[in-house]
View 1 (cartoon, helix red, strand yellow):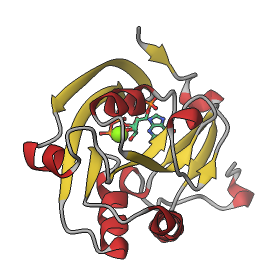
View 2 (tube, helix red, strand yellow; view 1 turned 180 degrees about the vertical axis):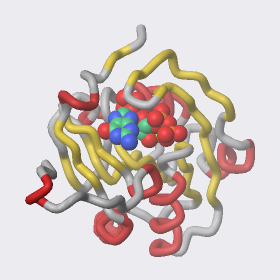
View 3 (tube, protein in one colour; view 1 turned 180 degrees about the horizontal axis):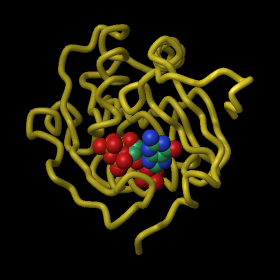
Length: 171
Ligand SMILES: O=P(O)(O)OC[C@H]1O[C@H](OP(=O)(O)OP(=O)(O)O)[C@H](O)[C@@H]1O
Ligand SMILES: Nc1nc2[nH]cnc2c(=O)[nH]1
Ligand SMILES: [Mg+2]
């Protein structure tokens, strides 16, 4: 069933800069360091790639795999498609159930993506940088919760742009 996020304009915007995202990923790593050690990091692409790189570097993990899932077309979520599953090597490192593996994503919203990956790796630790209330129960470790009607804008999706002066009627 395709879930529809309310139109972007109706939502609160939560823009995140590279600097803020890097600091939030480091904060996530401080928490994960209490839970580890991990044999491998599994990034849920594409949003999990940047946090996975930062977390792996901070935790000294050198085996990084991906689970490639497509579901959102901008703000609308369609059916989830698994384009690539967990590699055999990573599966083996996790004893077939994900034990000692760390799944990383940028955020959990409805929780559908997290649920699908948890079914693949039930004993893995699932971490995201941000979480919305609906998806929060799926996540083992996260840094910041935002409201369900917030749309997070990640640094790789945005750019600095010109904003006209207030006197010229800028919002
Ligand atoms: O909890 P959910 O409602 O399932 O939403 C969370 C997922 O949505 C986004 O990915 P998206 O599917 O947009 O793909 P992308 O990471 O390649 O941008 C985000 O990176 C999470 O993976
Ligand atoms: N960029 C972005 N992608 C999402 N996918 C599901 N929720 C979100 C969100 O809040 N921001
Ligand atoms: Mg994603």
